[in-house]
Amino acid sequence: MFIEYLLPILMVACLLLGIFTGYPVAFVLGGLSIIFALVGDVPLPYLGMMGSRIFGGVVENWLYIAIPLFVFMGLMLEKSGVASRLLLTLQRLFGQVRGGLAISVALLGVVMAASTGIVGASVVMLGMLALPVMFKQNYKEEMALGVVAASGTLGILIPPSIMLVLMGSIMQVSVGDLFKGALIPGLMLGALYVGYLLFMGWLKPEWMPLADPDDLDTDTTPLALALLRDLVGPVFLMVAVLGSIMSGIATPTEAAAIGALGAIILAVVARKLNYLTLRDVCYDTAKSTAMIIFIVIAATAYSLIFKRLGGDYLIMDIVSSIGLGPYGLLLSIMLMIFILGFFLEWIEISYVVLPLLLPVISLLDFGMTTQATLVWFGILMAINLQTSFLTPPFGYALFYLKGVTEGKVKITTIYKSIIPYVLLQVTGLILCIVFPAIILWLPGLL
Image (cartoon, rainbow, N blue to C red):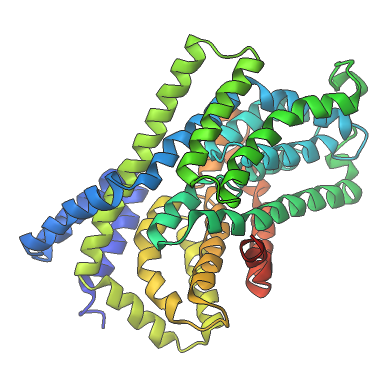
């Protein structure tokens, strides 16, 4: 078996080695595609399929129009100051609760995840807003860093999520169904974070001291009115985007356009919209979108050559040799995805691994329809891939956090801070496997 599948095994090994070199992932994927196409003597007519697959499957795919629109929406909200005002108001609300500022950060992470879906922007924004205040209040470093990193990653799961848009295209599943299926698990993870913070505030009160009244927001607006003022914008945007998709009024691409327009309106209301802001948002949107699409194109080429060299048969043989039932096989796949998340980005895993696993998952009997199985499996993968932002050595949220702290915190401290939250994410994943209704109830209802 090893000799028969030598080339696909070498392809995977070279990919891992290439990533460890620090070379841009898109170039590693694209370069390996060319090298192994030559080594494997792939016929030219087959290579011609690569161009049609890239242009027909990626460049001309209307779903991908949603990516720059969602990125634009998130970045515009970040610049508009909506998040900073909401954090200050939430801090007033939970100021006299043990760990109140950390709870405020977790709740803000949920709200901004449902409004932006951009992990990098969320982690950096939460870190810049909350970490200085937390350190001033003598929070234990691990408690402050962990909640910022974990809350910022909720944006990749709670819709509107770029990950779910790409997954819908790969799996040929309704993005609207994936959005519906991800909403409750995403909110559940947020609730697990808050529950953990409340428990630790009771167990280790010295780790999360009560806020000094002088550190609280000096806004004299009554708390109820301040909450109403600062929540209306994000909630309006969330309802406009998700409501239009879930009700069937708009497609995900159209809803993304609604979200981008809504973010501009909020920036106008906050008097933050000017030429410099618009220029920066457009520049960062173009840069982020180009990076995502470049990786998608390179991963498409890599996946195509990997299949040609027998990679799909390798996966099938490994799966059949395991000899487990449907749930045993599912757990094995989830464990493999979790381990790959230490070394690969979610985009590579989605575009390289997911297409190879779909035929296997479609054939398994979990007592539900094929469509429901695919939606369930897609959300399980999304929850699992969320951990890839937190797990070393390549967890992007860890790098964002290191940058925000400007080198004043050791990377080992950041690594330790995320351990409880990775365990909470794994707990959420297990709950969704044991109780599929957590994912499938809302899509079935709507």
